[in-house]
Amino acid sequence: MSKLDDQSLTALKTAFCYMPKTNDVNEFDHTGRVQQILDDIETVREVLLINDVDPDEVADDIHPDQANNSSY
Image (cartoon, rainbow, N blue to C red):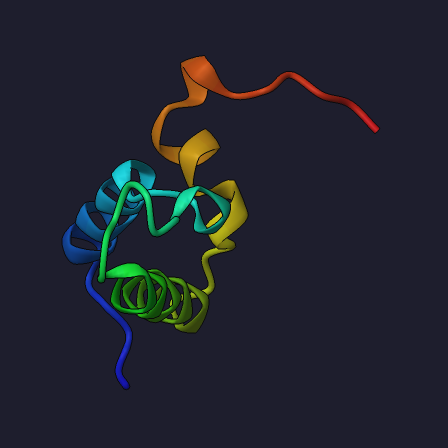
């Protein structure tokens, strides 16, 4: 798979921010679609990783004003 251009990558990162988190996907809220949703989340995560983007840091990148201000 080839890398995305900047505009496409930004769009994917933004969409990823609004996807449910894996641990929030359950049969009660997503009846009959749990595995498909988990597979879709994993696909997006893989494309982000291919494009050198840490999926766990996307929200802070897209919405820095809402980022956790943690220090190590």
